[in-house]
Image: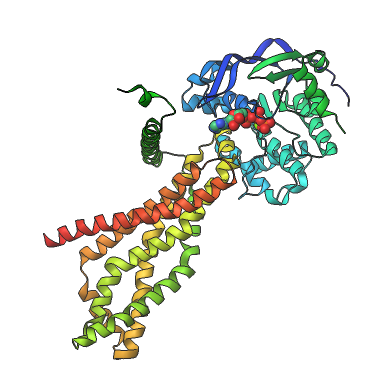
Length: 259
Length: 272
Ligand SMILES: Nc1ncnc2c1ncn2[C@@H]1O[C@H](COP(=O)(O)OP(=O)(O)OP(=O)(O)O)[C@@H](O)[C@H]1O
Ligand SMILES: [Mg+2]
């Protein structure tokens, strides 16, 4: 398990996402109880937390899929909660969202999956241009041969890659990865980790990576924050986050490396 | 007021609370149905038009229903004719069979049978498809890629079913009449031309208009119900099953209610 070399391109003066006092409850169940978060340009921020702590809810709020109850959510200078649907769509084009279970359109081939956002947003593109872009992102995720397959014919790891390719195709500034390595074997996980770092370098993105896989956290995170009891309790580099006596943090660490 | 009644754990209070909660839920659901339908009428007029998806759905709903519809329509024509014969024979009026079949099939059975079969086949498949797309976050994925899932999924399907169900109805009616003709021809030796002459003599322009309007409404209902149930399906695998199942049940229920209402209206017009 190798810690990551911090990306030299991080610009700590520019916040691409800035969240203050975010609260979200479902009925009477408070999931997020005042979350503050900054994502700086070019950085990979890992959000750790146990199952059910509201990690997915957090990035769904960032992308406007869910509404916050309270708090300011500022993404690329826009207040997400106050946008009309047109402005929200414009913002969403700059955000890539890789879903926990890939969410590929299973009635379409890989090519049609990748084409789906493209034909709707880059109308001046010719079919040849589209083909070129599709081949480019498929090559970037290392799956050129899968172009005509159906999602049901792909493995979990391949589906994750195609999901990532589908978000890359619109050249996002921000990538949100929801548990990119969940359910994958260790070797495939490492490949996905490499892919995440490569995307950061090659596409110049700022990313939030949600995970409870510490190997992944260490491999991709420039900075790590931990979500506990609805708030961010720890933040810093991977080693800084776990240099504490807090039992909850320690047990999280220990259980991850039992074998 | 006695204090015991105000305790939260008290059975009567609890019952009252559940009742109001259910009522609440019902009105919330009604409001969301209303918003769903309103959104359809708001979005159907403006580009981007998802023409490819619309054509694909027309094929799914229309062409793929043909085998089942043909068989059912044909058999219903034969059976209905055969079962009606004895009662007419009692009055020596079997020569009226074509007229009877015609009125029954064009006015009621054609639209109704088509709609019920489509509710089973089309409604459940739309409900299940959209339901599983909701559960596996494919609808969210469309939304975050700034494409409009409502337009792509809902508008195309509702339009396709509103268009294809009337077409299927016409087809079913014709096939049923053909079944009826075969039976009449076998027993009464009526020729095809005589049969269809009597068939068209028995129905009016109003009948055909009424049936068409009815099947447009049925088609809209089937598409809308399937889409609504699927689009708003609850999370989890059982949400998909529930969406498919309640699409069929709700659509059939609504079809019967609409049939009753429209029948009243048409009869009023006819009497006028
Ligand atoms: N749409 C929703 N409606 C109601 N409750 C929800 C909804 N979405 C999430 N929740 C609840 O919010 C809590 C946090 O959910 P979330 O999916 O964010 O967890 P998570 O941290 O991503 O967990 P996991 O690691 O298992 O994915 C859960 O208890 C869940 O039941
Ligand atoms: Mg999650």
